Image 1 (tube, helix red, strand yellow):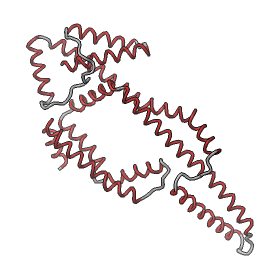
Image 2 (tube, one colour; image 1 turned 180 degrees about the vertical axis):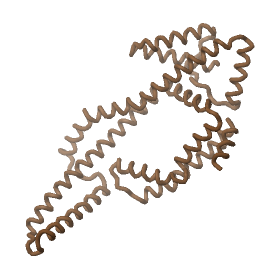
Image 3 (cartoon, rainbow, N blue to C red; image 1 turned 90 degrees about the vertical axis):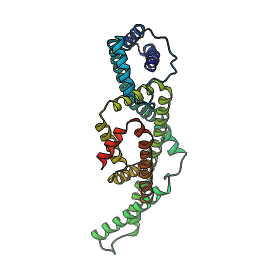
Image 4 (cartoon, one colour; image 1 turned 90 degrees about the horizontal axis):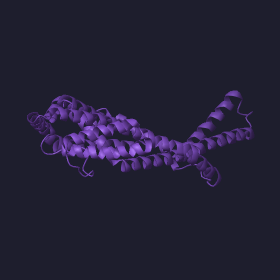
Amino acid sequence: MNKKLAWIEASLNDLDTWKNYYSLSFFSFEKKNLENTLYFLNFEKIDVTTAAYESIGLVPRSITRTLSGFQAELTGQSTSLVLQDFQISRYQALASLQYMLFLFSFPWGFSIFFKIWFLEPWLKNWWNTYQFQIFLNSFQQEIALKRLQEIEELIWLDKIMVNSLKEIKSHDLNIEIHQKTIQLVKIYNENSLNTLLQLLTDIIYFIILSAVFILGKKRLAILNSWIQELFYSLSDTMKAFFILLLTDLCIGFHSPHGWEIVIGSFLEHLGFAHNKHIISCFVSTFPVILDTVFKYWISRHLNRISPSIVATYHTMNE
């Protein structure tokens, strides 16, 4: 209960910040309700550096909550505790959803805005003025050479199909190949520019996302508590179902094909060619590491917290 009150104190400080910057009446209403709850329970103020969520201990939280509820029934405080839990759960869900929306929208929106208005004009000017290199790596150069060879073969084939071999003039053929080469150079120059631009945009996105995580520790603690509450409020069968679904997606029988698609798309996003050796090496090692980490988590953490979930999981897995 003291940790819940510490979470309320941390939430009140967070609400003051939102009120000063945004002046939202809804947060003022939530603050008033939380202050009334603190006044009603007559508890002393606790340092806000305490964790804003209930940590997982040796004793399952279901047992401690049952004992706390039984004690509240004996002392006649069940009504106030129900009201307090409802207010905490409502604000916890609202704050978590807002923070999740902020995490998805703000870093992405800021990086796109910075890319369009600042990064793209500067990078285009620098790349086309001071940079004489067309390809970012040797993989792009190999692909371009193969494509140029295919174009030359297609031009020769078209000329042979239209005219006889004696009527084909090497001068006209060289001019046409030269034009196609210039077009190909422009295409790959634009691709290299877009790849570099996307890479810098991704770096800015992860910098902004890291800053949001660092500056929003209180909100992150509330989100962590809310996710834990959602997970532990499920039945053992549903918990085992979601765990089994997640493991089958990541390390199941059909997961290698999915990992090949993910890694191939990531390499293309960075401007690299589709390398079968790198993808095969990753697919053969990374799921094994995930499987080992997951089994360690079950034996060290989940088996201690809720053995019934582990038993249900093994039954469903068999």
